[in-house]
Image: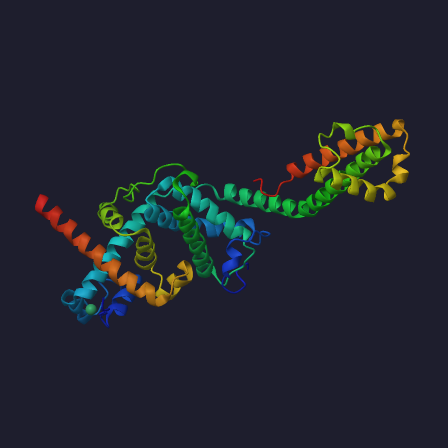
Length: 181
Length: 185
Ligand SMILES: [Zn+2]
């Protein structure tokens, strides 16, 4: 489509915007607007939109500014709190991982000590998983030796504490999920 | 004065930050700009309930953007820009996920007492939402092509062409309606 603009459109727009149209406008511009199809189009559309704007503004509902201001303050505070909580979430995830690692170590040490859990496994000694298990066990054996000598009276409360820590960490992490609104 | 920095940067629209404008300054700005903003949102979307929600959201983002602008005109332009982004996001969103599950009518259905506004309604409904935005910003708000480019993120040259086409279409529809009305009389 070719854009054939009228060189006087700008003048017409300016007069319309300043509220001079049609009474305080030079006669030659008025005569031009009657004969020029572009300017007629501009006048028709501009006047329709301006009148629609006035009518719509008159009908516009306006909530109290205080309500919007208060909501903005509230949202601002919420976002500030969320920003502060982000490092806490990282710490919680780290704590959870540490707790799980400690629980795994504790369990592995007890298995190594020979509590008799291995028979629960359904595989034979020749099974690849069984071989892997034995290798893992032997690697852990060195570093877990001191763990293995824990008396049962100390082991049970420790396991319970570890489970509790894990539960609390998971709960807090879920509570502070940044995706929550 | 709170209006003290340059024009908004695109990223700033989405970034929450501390509030800069004090309550009194906001009250004055809100009083002058809320109704024109609502009119824009309502006439372009054709959905007054959506306009209520988006207007409120636009002001919240405006306050959160940590900007002091170079005068009220720039501030209002920035507000219209936020509103334009919100409208665009609304149209991109699947219908069921939209802010309000109210079905959006095809024709802008903002009811006013004015005959002129009613005349414009069917003509506006016949053009695309983007063209409605451009037409409203140009002919109702009186923004220049450059300002519309800033508000909508479109190129000035495209705006010129799009406005040229949509203005012609709306003018033809208005003339057709006027002829139809005069025949009925
Ligand atoms: Zn002309």
